[in-house]
Length: 241
Image (cartoon, rainbow, N blue to C red; front, side, top):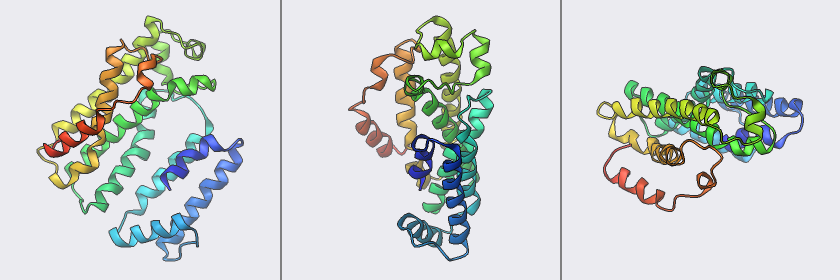
């Protein structure tokens, strides 16, 4: 379901079609919680997961509602708007993951909120070259205006200092959320750690972008880190996230 929702925006040419697909998923979730799932493979599996793990309907609906609002294809007005989007999508998905692991804990939820926001910010940064190639810009407008960066600068893939300053400010916010999440690790149940291992990939990207002096269009940022699986294993073995 998550991949379907994520791909709706890129796979439809008209907003109306996207809205229809979102309405389908809203009705599907309502039907699932009424114990009447439609005969559709993804819906049936989701219904089984809801029954097995007693998943909270609110998190599912928040993801759909936020994806629906995001069909407008507009840049985020400020970093808070980007963080709200990340909270309602990435963090909500983490809350559901924690429920699947049998964890309902305030500290784990607090960490999940920060990790989800970091994930949303990093995803926005990583997708910038792709969006620029399609003549779209989603980086927060307030930070771009602060450094005198126009949409055309980003569409031309400018490597100027002002563009790098924008990326630095946004990346710093993601780093701050990671730092907050990790400061809670002594209070978070160890059983929750597998849900948070994505922090390894987030930190890897933030380190790589720092190494290229926050040049978001640097080719090395599109290359896979072959040592990432090893880093994930080590963090898992150390029982850290």
